[in-house]
Image (cartoon, rainbow, N blue to C red):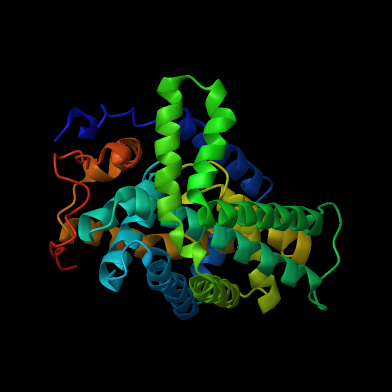
Length: 377
């Protein structure tokens, strides 16, 4: 093992991104709870229908095995033999980490966990998750535009969601088109970078960026095949459609008279809100998004909206967190490996060109030889 494969010294638990996320969460929690009767919020949570809230929690949790299924087509170009159980386990670990750790470490933990369970490079695994997020963005913005165009959607003023959604949709289309062109001509894309931006960058900086670009293009190979693109789009609709059903059942649990199109709209608003930096678990962003979507659009009272947001958020938070902790224990992964997964992913990308496979925080390799059998999950 070359020295390039060793992991970097651990970063502080809270870097500037984590601190910024906490500040944003605190500010949005203040906005969400401003002028709200906390006793009324507590009463409405106690009086929520427990069976409907359980059903909403189950529907919200079903989203994660669907994500595990959708991950398969994205991994097919780099590892056609990928199995559902390791993908689901890695998904649970990643979202658990997002709920308990700052700075969205879960995205890196998910890629790292899969590389420990399947013979897939960390860089390729992480690249597939970048593409997954692009499909999520396209689906969420499409759902938002559909909701806004729905005949029964109420008129409201003060916030131009349609303009923002259209702008985001255009950005996603432009970005996705550029990505497709890069993936279909990866060597040309790398050469173009080297001839343009690469010329003005110092050599110490240019080489890692070129390695990262090559590793990324390897990981997003799924979008070279239109069949895989269509399959992934179909599963993306299933993922977010199931999430909207969970929101709608949650409305029923709290006695909110908001139709299904309102669930589609609110889920999209919250999904866009949680793209901002936040504290672990997206607390603050979720509640502020719910208050905006329910109070200002559907005329729900502030206390009712915040009660729904807190109750539904916690009902979805607990199951995936427990599942992630279970799989972390079941698969023999350490908490330190999850915390340092970002450094492992970055190191693997940088050393990929030299053919090294970096060690994880505990000294174990992050990818297995292609002929080895991953442990059962």
